[in-house]
Length: 315
Ligand SMILES: [Zn+2]
Image (cartoon, rainbow, N blue to C red; front, side):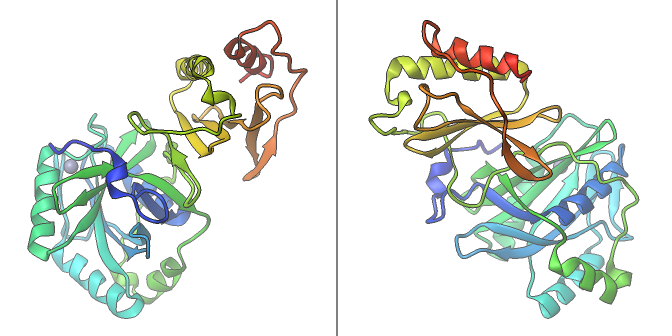
């Protein structure tokens, strides 16, 4: 098994290359394919382009063909179906085969198996590809989970974060209408567990070992305050499964909670800790600031003041 390495190795001018771009509609399509198959592997192919910054952009997901081999621990695509789709998608839309996907259904494995890695790298070598995407689905209590990985010709693999574009891919409707005989229609439901999402630009997720520098007047430039911050993170992680740290710039860090039960961002900007952290919640897909009670850090540790604040507004 190839171990994940520091993503900074693959820095590009737009940030890091640990991102994948996809339309919400194509994620829905994948979810329907995954939720309809709780006990057997299913899968297909991913068509799209590489952006000028080298990120994979998914434009169209192909499902399993009529002669695909589907077993509890194996999926093999119907090659004739893949080739027929590939010909049309390239000829008509200049979309290329940038990856594959398959579901490990109810099995525990949420990442590629050793065999998946070996066959992906073999395929890349045969076709002379530098990079290829593999998405792994899972069936979890009626819902779909999806994780995306990117392989490099060096043998390295990184896990990707998702940039989800709203709405349908512009290719979905026109292609499905033009080639109804080449389109697999899944019967599952579009219920998807939360993904690790990020924005296309301006985000830098702090990772262990990464050297981070803060502005001199920012609270986290003080090592005692960094201990306070660690206590806040520890508290949130004890309550929520998905908590990530994002550094916007040298004077702003965000903690993002993206659990099914709660989605919000705690923003520690230049004014903190004199002012309260800003709490941003999505309302109808728009960010809104939560109104906060009186903020008073005097006499308290910063971490205690933040934790008390969160408890008082039931976060
Ligand atoms: Zn697999």
